[in-house]
Amino acid sequence: IMDGNGRWAKRRGLPRTAGHTEGEEALARLVRVAVRRNVGWLTVFGFSTENWTRPRAEVRHIVGLHKKLFGRVAELNELNVKVQWMGRPFDTPEARTPKFVQRAIRKAIADTANNTGMVLTVAFDYGSRAEIARAAKHARRASIASASGAVAGAITPHQLGAHLYDPNLPPVDVLVRTSGETRISNFMLWQSAGARVYFTDCSWPDFGAAEIDEAIALARPRSA
Ligand code: FPP
Image (tube, rainbow, N blue to C red; front, top):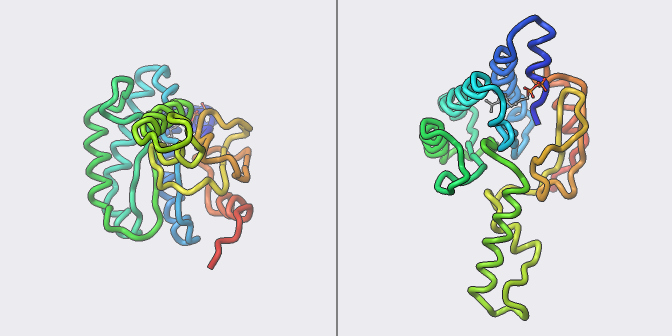
């Protein structure tokens, strides 16, 4: 959870948008470090379903940065990084991802699909409660349709998990939030059930190698 771009900028007498621009660079730098550290999955909260209420110019800037990020395909290919996205599905009435970002997302996913290294998932127009509610609806529908269970419509955690936006994401190992906020704010609530958490006062634009190493140190050792 990349927090503190606005405060980072304010401390420097810069507009909030400058903090987001620097935040995007920080993410690009961090992806490199994460790849070097052999991180398998990195999932970032780029834009929440609540973020649409921010001032229009700021929203436009952050949305533009996402288009730019999804356009950095050459870099991602060089790093063997596979890009994914999660959020409210484009074809649902609530979804708010603009068409030009949808195109950038589809292209980035297609252009990095053959990469075999780290999976970078960007959550955009994402909210965890909406994700879980939708998963419950779809899991229930599937359960009724199959009607082979003891109680048609009853669902297990396993069945619900299979209907999350990206069912292939592994459980969160370490959840990181920057900038002194010790809240989860509707991010991957289901997937973080067993996560260690790393809260740091460091602002997102300053989050670098030393910080990610602290977070990685909390992770369970990966089985060989
Ligand atoms: C929090 O800073 C960050 C966001 C609202 C998300 C946007 C993140 C970026 C632009 C980083 C780059 C990432 C991508 C995927 C392009 P804040 O505005 O909440 O900071 P504040 O709490 O100090 O105001």
